[in-house]
Image 1 (cartoon, helix red, strand yellow):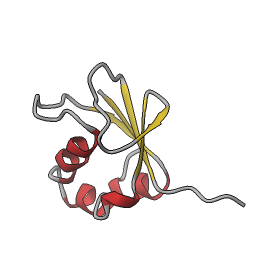
Image 2 (image 1 turned 45 degrees about the vertical axis):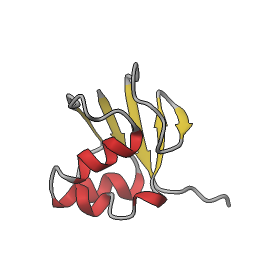
Image 3 (image 1 turned 180 degrees about the horizontal axis):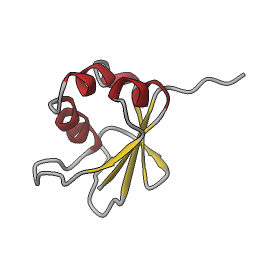
Length: 83
């Protein structure tokens, strides 16, 4: 699965995107965040407060409980503000 990182999430992890193979136990966006957090301190730092992280599956905004089945791409980004 292709994972995209934006704004300070990208800066903390140190990459804009990567392709990973998910374990069968990773079924939701929340599961994916937990899985990524265990990949190293840069991921733990990026996802240290998962409640503020926003996600999109195949370019559609989703909640943490959203299922990943069939997804080709997941993007993570911080909350956006208007201006």
